[in-house]
Length: 166
Image 1 (spheres, rainbow, N blue to C red):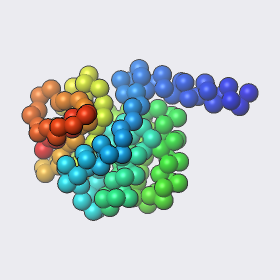
Image 2 (spheres, one colour):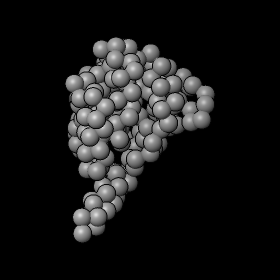
Image 3 (cartoon, rainbow, N blue to C red):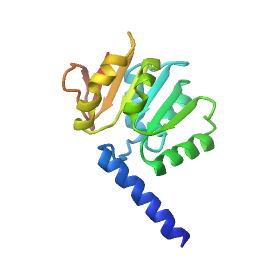
Image 4 (cartoon, one colour):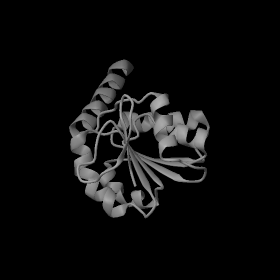
């Protein structure tokens, strides 16, 4: 019975993420580190991960770069998983996680030195104006695999490609 409840919760959470256009897709640690190095993430800077999945980006940013992390996740399962992973990693003092649609948390972008995205093209196109409106001067956006429609950035070649916007 417990397994059935867990399976329904997990499947429902995945369905919510898929419908929202932000299903959980994992990056390899190597890609995450390459992206964070490419934007020159530094100690005490703030990184926002919109659609933070399991929280690995936030944990790596905190543990290896000394950054403060803020994540937003719409899937109840992955939100709870991120909270657990952050706690187990010992990075709770440096990482905050919010539950819900990241459009609801647009103002968080104004706190960011770096905005990290690994979202589908259609989602990026949808939130590009929100990010542009709230991004502070000097902040950078790093997108793994998917491009902004209206902004030119530089490309870090590899598989997947990493796009940097400033």
